[in-house]
Length: 604
Image (cartoon, rainbow, N blue to C red; front, side, top):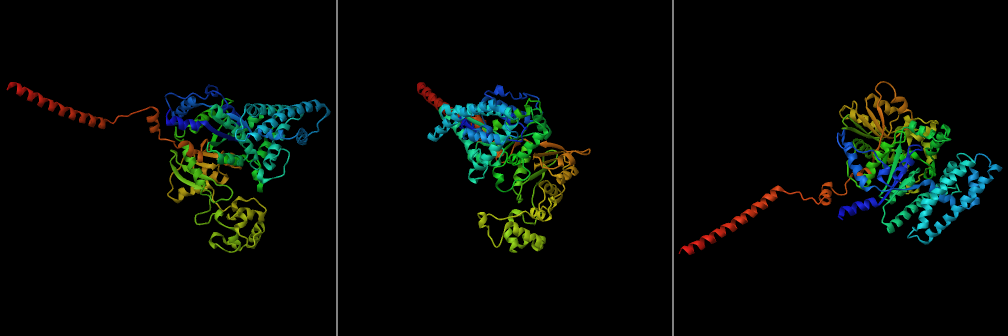
C-alpha cells in the first residue's frame, strides 16, 4: 500500500451529496441511481474505445473506467423520513389533531377502520422512535448500535410509506399537505405541530439530518466501510449552507430540465393535475419572501443558484443516459480530483461565476461571459452601476440623509423631498448609526424606494446595468471584437432587454444556470429566423470547480508512485557507462604494464 492509496481511500471514505431541484426534475431518480449496490446495477452508458469525436468522450472513458473500480453505494436519506421523526415525537392525540387539521373534508364514520389502522401504525413506530431517542441520549459519542441503525434506515422509511398510503386513502393529497405543513413548522419552531417562529430553531431540521449521518460514521468505525450519503432533497438554502460549512466533502447537486419535460413527468403520475403542479411551484418558489420568512421557507431558485454541481436531466423516456453520464464524471472527480480537466462550458461559466462576485447589487449578483464561436473569451461582465458611479452596497442611508459622501448620490436623491422622506420613514433614521446593524453598512435599493412612491414595479429604475448588457458593452468599449455565432454564458438566463441584445449580436448559444422569471426565452429568443440555441448549464461551478479539478498530487507523480516507474535518463546512463569504461581502461592498462614487467623479468 502506497501513500496514494491512503490519500484517495480517505477521499472516498466520506462523501455527502445534497440534491436540489424543482419537483419533477429528477432528484429522486438520481438518488435511486446512487443507491445501487453494484456498478453493473448502476449501468451507465459504455464509453467509446476508438473513433472519438471529441476530448469529452475520452474524458468519459477515463472517469467510467475509474468509477467502475471504485464504485460505492450511497446511503439514501430522504428529507421526508426526517420529517417523520418529528411527527413521531408527538403523542398520538397531537398527531391525530394535526393531520385532521390539514384535511379539506371532514372525516366520515366510514373512515373509522382507517383511523384504527392509522393509530396502530403510528403507535408501533412511535415506540420504536422512543427507543432510538433513549439510545442517542445515553450514547452521544457513539450513536450507532444495530437496533438504532435499523430504525432510522429501515423502519423509518417503512413508516413514511405506510403513512402515505393510509393518509391518501383517507383523503387524496393529504400526506403531501401534511408533510409540507410539518416541514415548515419544523423550520419555524423546531416542532411538528407549532408554527410560531423561533430564530434559534432554524438549523434544527439540518441537525436531525446530521445525526443520521453521524450514525453512519460511527458505524463505519466498526465496519471500516465508506460513508457515502445522498440527501433527497434540499429545498431551503440555509440547510445547504449548514452542511457546506461542516463538511468539505459536501456537494450540493441541482437537477434541472426543461419546464415542459418536468410538467409532463408530473402529469404522468396518478392523481396529479396542472392545478396541483401550479400549487407545488408556488410553494417551492414563493413570489416574494419578506423578513425572516427567508430562513424557513422553501426557495428552490436560491438552492439552484448556490449549487456546486448542475446536472441536466432531459426527457429520455426513463433511460437516464445523460444523467448517468454526468454522474460518472462528477462522482469520479469527487473521489479523485483532477483525474480529468473541465469542459469548455465549465471553464467559461466559472469565469462568469467569479465575475458576479464583483457586483455591488444588493439583491442578486449575476455574471456573464461572451465568447466567439471557438470559445475564446471576448468580454466579461457583471451587474453593476456604470463606471464612475458608486455601487449600491457602498452607499449608506445615513450618509444620504445627513448630506455626507456627496459624490455617491444623484441630484434626484439629494433634492427630492418626497424620496428623502420615504427613505427616512422606511429606515427610521434620525442620526442613527450602523450599530443597530452590527456594524454593517445600512444600504438601500433606489428602485425599491422609487417604486414604493410610484406604487409600481418598474424595472427601469434600477441603477445597475445587467451582467449580459455590461459584457456586450465591453466589446464596443474596447475594440469591437467579433462575436458572430458566439456564445453567451450567464449565471441567470437573460431578461427580455438583454435577450434582444444577444439576438442582435447574432449570439449562437445562450448557456444559463437558472431561468429568469420573464418571457425572454419564449418571446424574444424563440422568434424569427436566427434564433439562438438555449442550453441549460451542466457542470461544476464555484468552490466545486476548484475542489474537483485541482489535483491533490501531479498526475505524473501519481504514475511514478503507483506504477513504480523509473524512466531512464539516457544522458546520465551514457555518462555513467563512460565513467565505468574509463575505470575499466585504467585497470586494463595497469594489468598490461604488470604483464610486460613480468615478461621482461623472464627474458632476463
